[in-house]
Length: 175
Image (cartoon, one colour):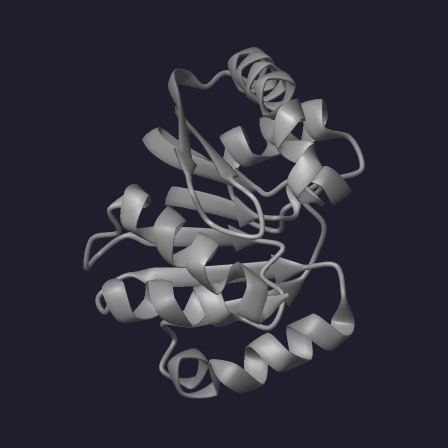
């Protein structure tokens, strides 16, 4: 998945416009590839990754060991249902190909909203499982827009990128 998500993650990080001092959360961080990419763009900031899998947390921790020892990165085993961070802790957050696995997306988006600072930016990147899933993109756009709005996000925009095997959707919302 890390290889498959590399282009999607790079695209989302670019669209988030990560700045040198940003505090960024990667939800469903997997082996920590995005955490590493973000940390390189935010050398004076802080990057946290969470994943429910202990194996992924171990891999992400190993990949980001130097930055973790320096206090620049933190990787935790946690669910989006209960993020282990205080309110208004992050400037930006992203979730790449993990949204479809969230236990309760509507409630989980409110949890993401909680940990973002006012004006914070959140990107959800989802890729249809198969190329024929591209026909379902308008429904996914509507779902994300509706759920982000209900969770308190505004200034929502939907972006697509012609990445293969299928088009990606990136929904951005500001707190």
